Image (cartoon, rainbow, N blue to C red; front, side):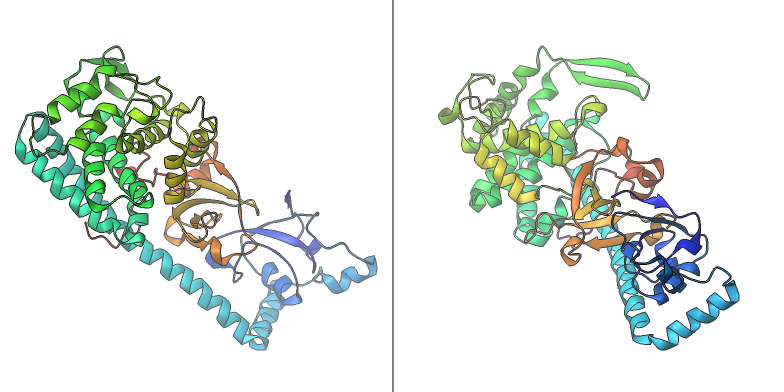
Length: 451
């Protein structure tokens, strides 16, 4: 699809496939790209102020006879008063159409503002949970049994939320404000929640889910006892676990958790094994497929996914869609498989191929960011759409399940977006498993929160 600027509005005609660039609320059409079918639409487009218009010759109807051009376009000498008069006539002639268009636009506006209100609830809920998890890590690291008890209450509350499919989908829309360089609790909470969501898809019992959640929450706690390296970067002082001692952290974490009699044995085993790999290439023991616990196999997949999305070098970070594709493609061969393909497929089923936070381009050339997953139609998520010249307070929500002619053609990395689109969509890593850069950039996503 190649749009060409329409420099002369006198060239507008019926059958032309156009793209309008202006505020969504400045025109009455349900889409910004469409084929002109009537004189009414010609008059309406001509009357839009500050409009930039484009057309696609390949998708436009050819003129059968040049003599028809006068009938298919507006008179060149039409002035603004005549256009306004024509618009008034059009509205009188087809009031029901205008009412339907206005009603649809008002419905889109209502959904967006409802979305914004729900976003705020999620922001507060997530930061409360995150604050609790930091206190829990501190307590457990210091050997306090109260920390384990607090962790049990937290994962139990998360489990209650996940019993509702809609709530579990919205949980994936929450973001944190810092990456791994600021502490392991952001990563740990991401892995915990996504492990539970995937575990539900795999049919784990309530007790198994609780054990999985505890193991996922504390899978990296052993890193707190390892020496760190200090790096000086443009953004400030950064700390990082010494790569030479990093392989020690699963055993360190497991040994710490063994000091708590109430901590489930299967959770401790999963912490010990979460860096093992099915082909025996992992650590600390080099275990192979059948010797690795099922809970550890789940956590190792989610842990790898989060690391792919949040590489230490941001330029190497993948989009969620890319990370899922990488995991799936690199584990097809059973002889070299490091991660369970069954669990990878369960994760894809849980979060879809386009997880919340994924930036996409549609077949009409427009950009959007996934805000919610439609589990009945995984390739048709709910999008926050970029509309040229509209403010962030007039953002448009589009449910692809209700748009039969629209579909996703590819995913886009934030750095590859045009600056205006990037600013409008503000891709603040909307999924809980993708870390944002600044707290001020937190995107609040809809959640009827029970947390």
